[in-house]
Length: 387
Image (cartoon, rainbow, N blue to C red):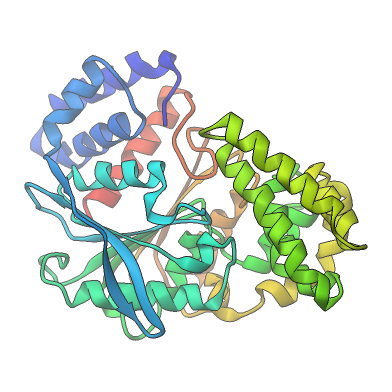
């Protein structure tokens, strides 16, 4: 999570100006410091930003109950806790709460005085977006609300969800068991309507009619969910095994190219062992051929994602404010999803703030841009951290 070096001076100047400002600018000083640290800035900017942080203790993994079993969680405790607890909900990723970027993000938030709890969602770890995941988020939030260490002065907590976990967090926060206990919900790269998002992954056509080539990784996840709809029943599980191999290789490709190459080779080998039409569809996955795979899956997106508990636009909204942060170039969940969710909330009496920024990719800060874009990101985080 590193910005291009050309924004170092911009950040440092902005941060120093804020540090010299009146007490009323405290939230923006914290926002600037958070952006510097979350972006992995080095040198003077980081040293100044660290004035606003406190030490963080990463606690051992523990299990908490939910209606159908138990969930692994990890707590991050700030030495000086002066903010409400925040539940950090992962996106679709096999590593769950052990994913290094999630761990780093949790530590960054906790360093600014917010106790953080990360919650592992087994279905998302299997690359499956299910109604059960929304139940898990709801039950984990209800558990947090029973723990004194997480409740703010007003007795409430915050929710922050990443990618598809962001949209599901908005849905969970609107449920009666927790809606009055949630102070805010933030979605980073989240969706408003799941079928519409899946349609984009199949076609590359966004809700406003514009086009952007979709990420093949996202379409592989759609095929995983639709396997039993597009191939004969005996072929579904072997096809899913091959898809999971490809997705695991894609994950490894970010951290270990050697292991990734072996797993990609395994995915191709599994494809060769499949019967038709599974072999052809898996060939599309391995070749990253979204143009041919998309039309196969498009007829099934309404059934795959149509449950109300999978989409904020199809469920009761929480009464708390929504903070929607999205990368303008996101090609997994298009940025227009955050714009549409903000409009939907406004039309239904809710409060939402959406920021679309070139400083964010799908779910992390990693690009440089203008001073104006940087200021908007600082202002956004200032509001979130001050909730």
